[in-house]
Image (cartoon, rainbow, N blue to C red; front, side):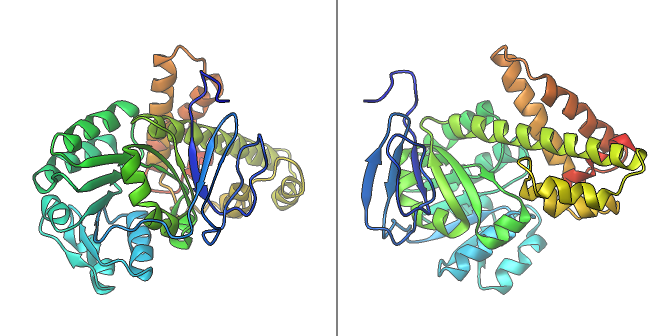
Length: 334
């Protein structure tokens, strides 16, 4: 039976078997529909996930464009909008319809996805979109924001009669292009079920976590861990250099051990060469560190490692690295 103090999760991702009493592994989209439960979670797998009749996409930035393009490649006809219309050019060139406003994008579609960069932008989008929302429509915000902002956006959306889902993603530009994102969803379960198809197109996994705010909190925790890992990795590279050791050998040693992480293999060589092509801008990583620490403050949870890492990101920002990749945190130590 379910433990009274553990939330019930729903997960849909690529897996062929579900081990009993264990967290689920990835699930094949072609798996026959089954439902399995463990003490900690519920796994929902569907062969033919629901698909909304029409889809809108708000936000044409470093993440939004590849996500929207993947939806179009899968056959979805998109209506798109961005505060700067020119940013939508790759989508329009691929066949998307450009809306004149956020409200128009929502009015023209059954479900609208939103990918913007800050809590302030998420609120502004919701307020602008509200006139185009109504009963029967869905609004899925995949931006990374704090739980309070997500709950405020939910209130705006639900006030129109529409359904709301927060679904922040784990993954940067590369996974967005490859359809390899991980969605942490919370909110209206019926909407989560309805957008299972688009989520499968854009990502390799999606989890349903319950009430609005749960997805936002999980994403901030994940990103605080990622930010702390990168800061520690930067320290190691700098110490390797100061000790007169070969950074390439250090990267090879790490790649062969238990602490290996894809992030180190992808970003390490560029960090050694002082190059930081943006897959996830440093200013956004620091924003996520700040929001995670604010959550920790609310809950009186100590986060000394994340707090120290956050100071490194702030130093890098002062050095003008806002729009570089977050691996530019190494410049805080140089």
